[in-house]
Image (cartoon, rainbow, N blue to C red; front, side, top):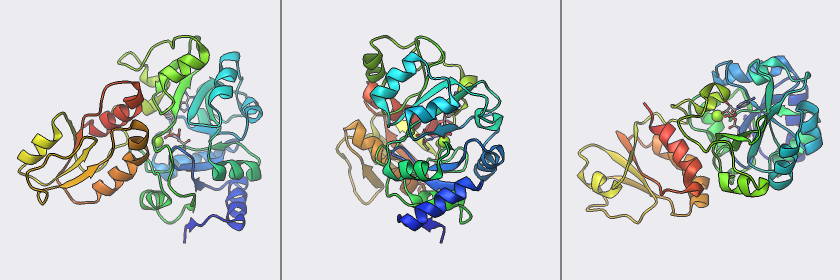
Length: 320
Ligand code: TXA
Ligand code: MG
């Protein structure tokens, strides 16, 4: 059984698998990661083959402390302030890399992305393994990220060891911030928002998210990403569209249902609280995607920064 229940013996097994160059999927507070020893080029290369991930897309290095981050990255003053404010937590910092980080981790680039996860199981795994752990999300490339051990199993199959830590609380991938430039620049929105970062630094970021973001700097920004297999559309008046639909639709909404006939389609009403919505979005997409409908209709989410990461992931999920 590739899903390992959480106990000391399985944590040791997972840690020794990492130490000996193997792969382990493990829980973080954002999504599950597919981990390998970040200092072992061969082990990290195996992550790319297991995911079908293009070698041009660098991976995040997970560390157990600020000091451990400084062993793989050149930590500057801005980064130190952000680590103080947000670590452990869902903020990834891109910094100049040190020579010990293999090229496969950084896609040949001179920077490395580092993050200290805020999940007790990830932290214990990092402690016992005693090495930094490179880990992208534990799904096939371009699929929806996993927020449960079962999602990892469904996406990557029986060959990978999966440490079960229950559902991921944040539910969306970390915010990725480039701190090699001053002021820093947002590369991927997450539940740590622009406003929170600007207030911690007491300065404006270089650019908010938008069309000017340079895709080559963070390939995770490619338009199609995080996508279900079922076609997904974002619609304004989701209840009107759903009521009028002639094909089989599933609705994901945050507003109260206004339906003519409940028998007509499947409904997932999340919530108008963005933090709670984020926590259940991927789980909902995983469920809806296997429900066998023709189309997923997602109600456009409200404006504003608190919804920025959710809006970003939904836009990519809807991209053809
Ligand atoms: O929450 C998360 O970040 C999860 C958990 C497992 O930590 N990981 C995750 O990894 O989402 P992944 O590989 O799915 O996304 C990593 C993102 C990608 O957009 C990648 O392009 C960007 O981080 N990235 C990694 N290294 C980078 C670098 N050196 N420069 C710029 N972007 C980088
Ligand atoms: Mg991913």
